[in-house]
Length: 427
Image (cartoon, rainbow, N blue to C red; front, side, top):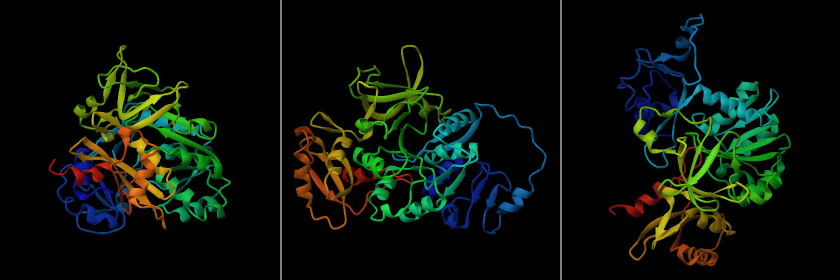
């Protein structure tokens, strides 16, 4: 959840006319809710409390006219503004159109969504991660089970109780589910399609899900902004589980170098893409929108992803890293993801992130931040030496530090900027 200052910026920047609020979040908005000039008179709507200046939701709803206003909605008209998770700083308002959302619903509905489907969701409703399966469920009239807060046993119990057929989870949730000691005690045979997005699923985790969790495992790679999207059917591509799949139907994905030139197959560069699911732009920020655009020789517009990756000979996309997370040590480019994959194979490690820290000798050097499994005995130095045996000379970890947990956004992305900040203060 955003802090008060960030939420105030989002409400103001989006030109919101109404603010709907539950009692449990009054403390979050209290510092600013009396000074929002963008709200209309009577635009403060209370769900479950009474206070001066606030209208009850029931009264506001019942005062609406019964007549059809006959407002025509076009495919290019705005549907929603989703604020990015803010892993790189201040969130940006991503404006999607009605046309994009209709296309999303129809495309996802082809993944065996039907009127008798039961979809279980446990990620925030303001996230694109949640909207992607929610919209097709609403379109076909499926039942939706919403979890107020995710916990593994509660999730598994709900899947069993309601015979859930579809779900969308982020990688950290899959990790916790598959590691739970009572996983095998629940009847999950009703599950048909499991989706994952927002961060890469590690190959070993995909393999475990395919082996033990019923139903298809589908990984979706893409941006909330839209553009290049890839899909991996993990069950049907056991030899490609290290990838994020192939470009989806109607999607073009290419790889470019820092100068904006396309690179050859197999070479690493920035991932750019275009599709029918591209946002209208960052709301009120044409300057930021222009920064993510790339155009090919024919003048077609693509969105820059900020991710580095490459295509193999079969057209499967392999991610290397976020470009901003790339470590440049002694003039060599080191992709943190490569080091994290190695560390994650250690039997004592439950979670891991690799970041760049300052080095007098190399400029930057990789540091591994590790969460150990309960009862693990390996020391930091033992883990570092073990990992470095599998890494190239230029990739080697300078140190390992243990953490109780790693900071994550509301949809499970590791906040590396928070991890790096203490090491780079005053530099």
